[in-house]
Image 1 (tube, rainbow, N blue to C red):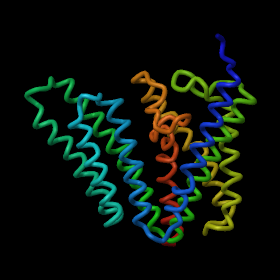
Image 2: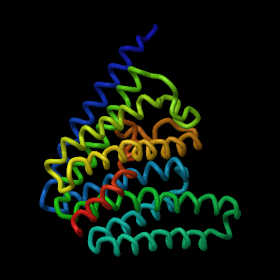
Image 3: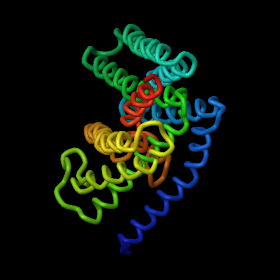
Length: 278
C-alpha cells in the first residue's frame, strides 16, 4: 500500500505545531515569572534532557557512568550561574571539566589511550557546548528586564527557524552546505535572517536599545543561529544520526530544538549586560 507523501508532511506539520502549543506556555511563564526558581528548574530539566541525548549518541548507552558525570557537571555549571552569576558559572565549568579528569584517572588502566582521549574530548565538548552555553539562559534571566530579553531571543530564534524553513521550501535555490545539512538553502538562510530582523523591530518598543540597534542584533542572530544549527548538524552527520532523540515527536529531541538558541543566547546576554551597565 502506497503512502501519500503530502499526508506525511501534513502530519509532521500538525505534530510540530501541537508540541509547540503544549510546550511554549510553561516556557514563557517561567521566563516572565518573578520567581526565578521556576525558570531554574525548567532549565535543569531541559539541560538534563539535552545531556541525556548527547550522552546516548556520543558516549553510547553502556557508558552510564560518564553520562552521570556529564549530568553532575551540568548541575555544577547551572547551579554556579544560578547562585553566583558569571563567577559561579566559570567555577562550575572548571569543576565539570575536573570530573572528566577524574574519570580518566580511574579508567586509565581499563581503557586504551586513543579510546580514553576520544571519550574525554567528547565529554569536554559536552561541557563547553551544552553546559556552558545553556547556563547563559540563567545569567540572562538575572539582568534587568531579563524575562523580556529571554522572550526576545526565543522569538527571534523561532522566527528565523520558521522563516528559513518556509522560504527555503518555497524558493529552494542553491544549497547552503549540502555536505552537512542537505536540506538547507541560501534562500532559507536569507529568509530566516529577514524574519529575525522583522521580529527585532517589533520587539524594539519593549527593550532598551534603539530600534536600529536591535534590528542589527536580529540580523546577526539570524546568521549566528544558523551557524549553531549547522554545528549540531555536523556532529550528527559525523555520528550518522538524523535526530538526537524522539522526545519531542516531530521536533526531534531537546538538543535539536536548542541548537540555534544555545548560540544566540550568548550575544544577547552580552548586549543586554552592556546596555544595562552603560
